[in-house]
Length: 360
Image (cartoon, rainbow, N blue to C red):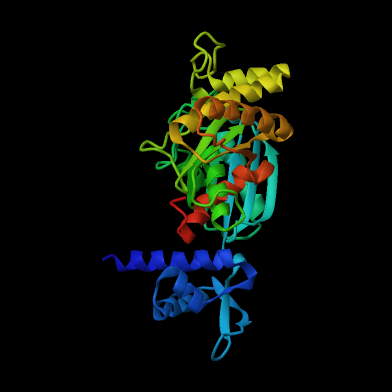
């Protein structure tokens, strides 16, 4: 038995319950009941968490018998993580406390085509300006895929082939002197939603959903059984480049008739209803393939026309359900987090593992 790993796992269980309890706190007895650990084990873990500054007393609660129980809470300011969203033309960086709450934020223009050295230097400068002396757990970076999440190496980002093979994680970690985790923007946003759901602030609990991001490009983040699905080669979710029109317009990826180019062309022409129907067709494919419970929409294009896209995608999914019978229509909604949802999700690449919420 790997005792250090077991202790870490048990501490994560306790930390997550402290996180979800919020400022009201939770007693040691409740922690033991909910984790299945012995009261003695919980006492040892909470003592260690208090010594490390991660937990503190939150008062006392009346007991059904005996003396009042001391309740404990998470100390949000005991640790921080940086979330960095590199979009094709804009950079967003946030500093989050242990609860995931944003305590500082910066935005700046970005040209992803300016070259790796310039982008890394510009991003590092914005992170350093944001920190102001705070020493974070690390930096989570989210940007368009495809990429290798495990190695932090980019592949051929659509429209920016010069990034193919660039070791972004190592380059940024070397520049900042901090741990760095890299993932696709859609995976980061989906992780943020899934972790929020676990704390009671999100819409899905432990179910399965697709996060569809339409901004300067189009992609998907998939959460299956409460966990982000990246695939064996961490390439899952390249939603925008499924071909649905064989003789359609040429996409920057080299194929014709991809959902991404069809959506973006429709948006460019101002025919938003058409863009929503195309996005709905792709969403219906995902529902059919994965039997997911929910479709969430995000990205700047969706944010500017939320009603149009929710209505249009929902209509396509409704038509599909009626044709197939069975009755249940998969709901469509707007992902929480707004314009900084991807950056907040990027911070969760560092925070979520502390609470046993997946591998980040």
